[in-house]
Image 1 (tube, rainbow, N blue to C red):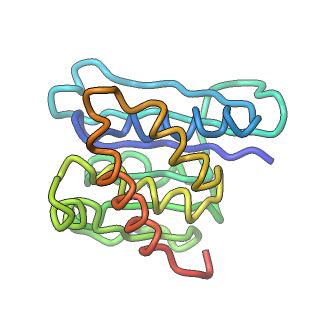
Image 2 (spheres, rainbow, N blue to C red; image 1 turned 90 degrees about the vertical axis):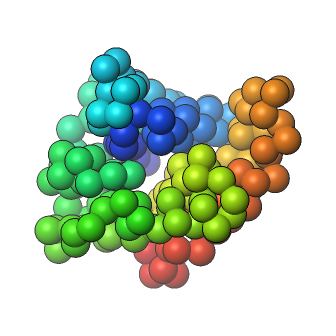
Length: 181
C-alpha cells in the first residue's frame, strides 16, 4: 500500500518537520519513503510545503500530484492544494487559520484547530504537532509509538525539554479525528 502526502503552510509553521517525522517513522517501521521539501523565499512567510510518499514497495517516482492526504496549515495552502487531493482522500486543515469551508465533497475533511490548541497547551510552536497527531490518526500511515520514538530521536538535544509538550500536542491532535475516518 502506498500513501502520498503534501504538508503545506507558511514558513515557520513546521510543515517540513511534520513531513520529516512521518518519513523517519516510516523508515524505522521498515517502509520505503520519499521526502521532498520545497522552501526558499517561502521561509519568510510565504507558502512552504513538502511531499512524502510512504510505501510497502519501491517508489517509482517521488513526484506527488494526487496525494491521498493534504495537510493545509493556512488558507493559501488550502487554496493551492485542496483540488489536488485524490477522490476519497483526506484533507486535514488547521481550522484556527482557515476561514472558509473546503469546496470538495468527495474527500474526508478533518478540521483541527491546531493553532488554538497549541496556544491552549502553552506554545503556538506545537501547532504542527497537533496537526501531525490528526494526520497519523486519520491515515494510520505509521504507528503512534513509532512517531513518538522518532520525535524523541530527532528532537535536537537543546529541545529535549519540549518532548512532553510535543507528546501532549500529538495526543490532542488525535482527538479531532472522527472515529469513522
